[in-house]
Amino acid sequence: MRYLTFALTKGRLADKTLELLEKNGLGCKEMEDKKSRKLIFVNEEKKLKFFLAKGPDVPTYVEHGAADIGVTGKDIIMEENRNIFEVLDLGFGKCRMCVCGPEEAREKLRHHEMIRVASKYPLIAKDYFHNKKHQTVDIIKLNGSIELAPIVGLSDVIVDIVETGATLRENGLSVLEEICPLSARMVVNQVSMRLEAERIRKIINDLKEVI
Amino acid sequence: MKTNSLLHTPEGVRDIYGDELQRKISLEERLRERIRSFGYNDIETPSFEYFDIYSKEIGTTPSKEIYKFFDSENNTLALRPDFTPGVVRSAVKYFMEDELPKKLVYLGNTFSNRSDLQGKFKEVTELGVEHLGDSAVDADAEMIYMSVCILKTAGLKDFQICIGTEEYFRGLCEAAGIEREERFVLSEHIRNKNYFGMLDFIESLDIDSDIKNALSSFSDFAGDAEVLDSANELAKGIERSEEAIARLKRLYGLLRVYGVDNYVSFDLGMLSKREYYTGIVFRAYTFGTGDAIIRGGRYDNLLEKFGGNGAAIGFTVVIDELMNTLSAQHIDIAVEEKRAIVTYDSTSLSEAVELAEELRSKSIHTEMLSLDFTEEKLKERAKETHVSTLYIIKNGEREEAEL
Image (cartoon, rainbow over all chains, first blue to last red; front, side):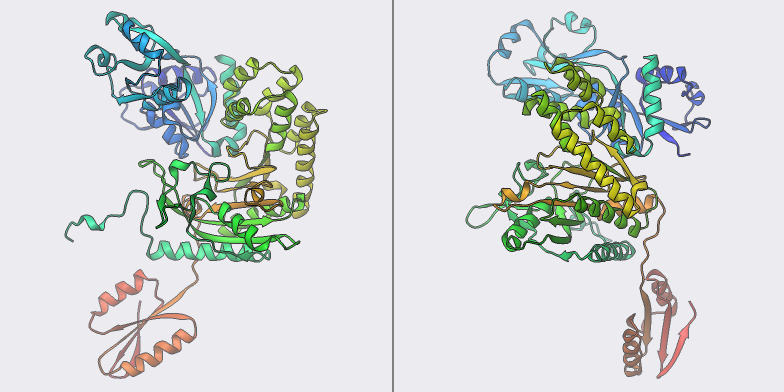
């Protein structure tokens, strides 16, 4: 039997995913050792391999078939826009993609006025403003601490993930518009989905039971 | 070597040489010959054409991924991103009076200006076929059979041809009164196997509950020929969808006659992004690559766009992808070439020419080198280029060096 390879997003998402898989006996003992420097972890009994990757790289591994299955956030799937199957909503890592900014900026979203938007997700921001709101915007790509941008005057609003909204409130920002809900998703390579249909379907169905 | 920026090729294109190129040419030739063996004729169309040929309604490549430039009269030209529109245009121009079907095979490079850093090439070699003017299910069957033959000729053993149809889905949408825009959203969810997105979207539609039920079952419509029965069951009374299933069943029957039914599976959720597909769509999958290695389908409306009429079906295989797949599966590409080297000193040119021509007449590719090089270097060269015999001629005397 061929190994099925999982690409998991480093961090909390991987822990949660393994917890779920564990419930179906699909987990991986080797991965529990946090000090391990191994890159690939194996479950010999079920012929599964696992590796950890940065979130945005997961769709890349899966698209190229370097991993058969991946788990990553919906935000990343949208931003990367790769040719992969999105087969399951794992139900954890729930949050929202939102347009945020100071209250004064709310007015600027009502017209087709050109505004500046800072985001870690330029593709999602562009798609939302161009295709849904029909507003022309100037997008500035940032790599972290996006909340800073409107405070220091780099942009009018930001497009970012909102979990509780605490950081926003503390900095005098609020959610102005919601773009879409987000959560962790399971993605599958299109070739694997066909050639390993039986095994992958079983994994999907088993996971559905325990979500 | 001195560093020189002139040595680099642009992102996404590359040089191919040596063994790799030999294997590539050998593979291309064998595959093309296999298609010719079905009575297909070669066709060559220009590498660039008017941009309109590849416009949104006709082409398969988004406009922003097409290389465009202008001619002296300021017409927009495009480097071909895909063969089908050009081949169909040329067929409408030259063969429309023929009553009998036209069968064409092409081989050449296509270009797409896709984004950098994704590990994909911008120039690739494609081999493809078009079968024009035959709407019968027999033509569908021959296409699938030929795809199987191509993959077997390439040396693959373990692969699967996945067959779907646009018509079943469109029949359901039509019966439910789902508008074009909504159909696009729904087909995207189904295509990406996004089950939850699909269910949510179907729930939001105000349509008949039977059809809702059928639409939400799309993820089950993948597998062996039995899935066709369950799909048919759910579309009772919807003529267009029932017809689509009936056609797939007839196709499956024919594939059994061809003896390739064991390579075939069905997936009614394999919908294309392109509007121009009108009947079956099919793709070939194998391990060692993340994407389909053959893509094809029926597009009976395409000829109309060029003012012609008639049915059309075809497929393409990207040679570069196929080569990657073969190497991932450790399958050798046979290269049949015999080579020899003849070296000679300054007094032996006439003997050397005579020997070389004799070898060449026996189809042995013979390279001549003067004896200014050491024997060691010559042997190295012989090894690199898979030379079987190294002849050394000194003072008119011929000897064969041991390799």
